[in-house]
Length: 446
Image (cartoon, rainbow, N blue to C red; front, side, top):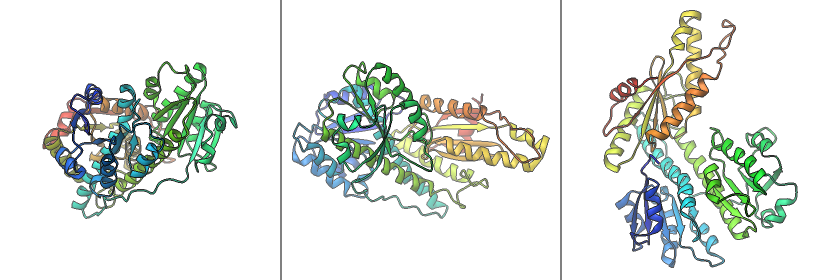
């Protein structure tokens, strides 16, 4: 792992096995044995995620108090050491926990599930930064998002189960207030979750009955996670004993939560609603972040930020690195094809291609990535909380998509345009400036 996010475990000793597992995965983990004032602990440690022991009643009270605080609620909180009381999951969910790790959560699952929580914390931090930058340009965007009410609905696609089968496996599902549709074929399920005018889904519950179905469900999970529009779709997996060699491999394919039959009804109900609540939170954050792009902050293309905005925002990322030890990356994209189109077909056609490229780049990257135009045919993407290894995967994916696509212009251009993209990657440095960042990335164009 290339992003050393800071994880705080409250109510755990320094030699806690969970801390060792998270440190081994590349996180920076700190333990506070004594449960103390949550707001003070957050201010003191500035973590990305907090794990809170609820072995005593004060742990739940800390979570509840933090979720009522406009600043503290921005940090994802996870309940741990929940015990086996029948109402433990309900209490954690009602207190406002963003996730719950049962006492039998192994190290591999802990690390896998931490990724979504770290990303949620990163989106919260980016909203604060992006809103501050937008404020300098005269756009005011609120950063306090009221805690969403507990979900009473939602619509799931049940993947890999025949009609009526999942109700037998998970008898609570029809009573949970969550609607569902069934799709036995994981390959067709991928098309259905992409959405249509007839149906849309808030998540998927995947049933893996045997090894043959496991391979098909692996495909479904990977397809969802690799789709820019679907990557945050909650995936809850129900597996028969022996269908997976271990649950860790299911998490690596993209599942959010994995349960083995027979499924405990309280476990299913709590985690389905936690997953749906988390998705709604991410959507709310995404809408606020997107609201910072407007006439005063956008480049004249309209779909990406101006060079001035990017420079001001880069300064904040650099200061965060200096003060908090965060890791961020920048990808530079240069498209010489635009100049060739201008020479062959004229400036109007080149402007249209440039417009399309800006829109595509903004759509291919995450909402928390700041995409701006820094030159005539040059774009940059600032990726917060992203190390070079992860950013390199994104760079290759984006360039691959653009290279394999055809861009249609006006009727004056009789063929689709295939673009050639050069790109370079660099890490954001302490107190960085845009000129130096572009120079470093330009030296590595390929």
